[in-house]
Length: 478
Image 1 (tube, rainbow, N blue to C red):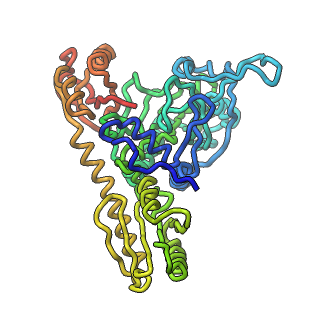
Image 2: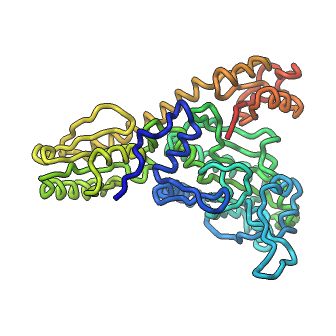
Image 3: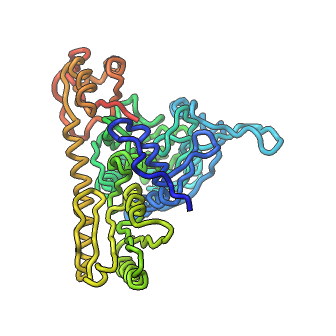
């Protein structure tokens, strides 16, 4: 069997972050390039991470009353054009179907870049009365956006996500839905993926096309660039009016619904790679790792003793944890150690003849530290404590980095210097005028990522000097 490239040949993360990222995604067998321009194949190990995200979200969505449906992949062009701002925002990225077999279609069909334009017409059929509200639907699917520049997980022509689409009786109900979903996303990203975020709303220039407001989570990656890790869109009545989605309220008045849409995608896997990896490869938080514990038997002349003990240990631990027994005899133990470091398994457990005789195992943490021997007695609880320490430590590391790379600026010069020296988020007072935002973008190459929730503005706009209406965090972004 031909062995794959050694992890020692990975590019240094500190020297070439972009190439390091790509090589980790490929060599850890998360994804691979395909013959289809800009599209990737997600390999089983990468898809197992996505399955973990799906399972966690699906449980929380169902607990909050959401149900799953499915809607068509293809959207008639006339439907996509009904909401003017929406179609303008997505037009450059839409892929079109123009023929069915040899026959040219009478109307082009868009391969969905998002599904508002096919779901709202169905709501117009299904919603008649206030008694039909709220409608809390989502679907798990792929979408296509014809990106000019692509990177594995971060930006591909086709990607996986879920998209929620809800309909409500009042503006307040719809806004509460957006905030609820943002809270669910924040718990996923921070508590499961161990990535700290800033939560807030987008300035108008960064909103979802057709939305009145976009709630967002923004994380900071180790190269100093921000990445969006979840959005929840308050659509107001824009799509309801475009698709004539009305209901008869209890006061016998016909009214338009208030709607929302929201999503996270496989981009989260890219965020995981960048947020926690090192020069050896991935580091996966235990709560999302496909395998929390990898058992490597030390093979040799005593296989008849070691293999049964390793299998028994895997069965024992498998009742509580996600466990992988790596008993492949075509690879050396040292090669397996490097392999599972590359793939980011939180804990590696080694068991050899001496360990069997002493009723112990040797444990190595992916986050570093010396190997430690653990007694087989009470090993489930001991590993549980270590896994929780790893999870907590990864979040603490990220939080410390975020705080160290978040600063404030009061003048345009200070902002420009911070973008070069601190490389992270810079908090800036803003008057609310688009012309001032444009000046900052042009001077710094940064974009306004988030207006934090419940943050009282202070100071004067660094461009025009007018009193600020908002505090905005700027960063360069993916």
